Amino acid sequence: MLPPGPTGKTRADGARETFLRGPTAIQELIEPMVSGKPYPIKGLLIYGMNIFHTLPKQERTRQALRNLDLVVSIDVLPQDHIAWSDVVLPEATYLERYDELWACSHKTPYIALREPAVEPLYDTKPGWWMARELGNRLGLEEFFPWEGIGQFLNRRLSSAGLSVETLRAQGGIAIQPGKPYLADFVADNTSPFGTPSQKIELYSDALAKANLAPMPNFESTPEPPAGFYRLIYGRSPVHTFGRTQNTPVLHAHTPDNAVWINDEEAARLGLKDGEKVWLENQDGARSGPVAVKATPRIRKDCAYMIHGFGHNAPGLTRAHGRGASDTALQTRYVLDPISGGAGLRVNFVKPVRGN
Image (cartoon, rainbow, N blue to C red; front, side):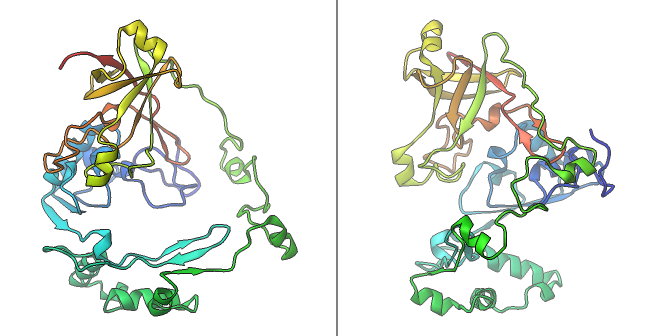
């Protein structure tokens, strides 16, 4: 663990807070839930994520949840973590609710409105309603100085001279003036790069002043043990993380994942394309069964699969038990002590026949 940075703080997971610019990562909170150090955490509100398909070391996550006094989950599906929750708040789906504005600073910036197509079914509520109601009942009315989502969105849009009504009249999207070309910045004597030098920086003065390597240093990862393959994973253009595997149309297109193994390695192991196997990692964790995809389009020392499968939630009637979970096989990770990012490609798996 690194010593505290210039702020005098070190995160519970060992990363220095100095260079963190975003919200706290959920993985940082797991350690205090388990050990109570450097501070105790007794409650957790889970929104918009499947905690068991997001964090490595699933058994540690289960241990953390056991130690909590209160777990509240907000979701639209009966996912894996729902059974671990003390309170479940069912949210309306994206087709039944207003959401925060989608503001993109692309080459051509735009602001987009997401509004409901139908009224919410059953006893569900949008997330903004839950947040406001909980806040007001906790005496935090000053943070919610608006009566409904329309008033909130109109206040947000007013800075751009827009409103919900004008945005809706434009088809729900407003194109904003942008600077798509570097020449536009040069003409205005400005820079598209938010760095002290206003240039692309390969050398970081901020890191150097903090006595950290100002340029990236390559650190090699361990090689796979004999008989194992480095576990790598990626996304599917059909699915979004682990959220859509139960959606009827998307499930029909891609109902499960497969494990890619080099065709020469598959032949050496006597594995046939399409054969179902279990995957076992270096610590004995298992997931599957999953079909083998024997292909020349992968290195001989790697095994690849799409993320988001291997759900263990009977309520997900289509996705339950389909394919293998890469997260279940991630019992190790390496933490970047500067940024707090977790390196997960340090786990190794082998195909195993049978149950």
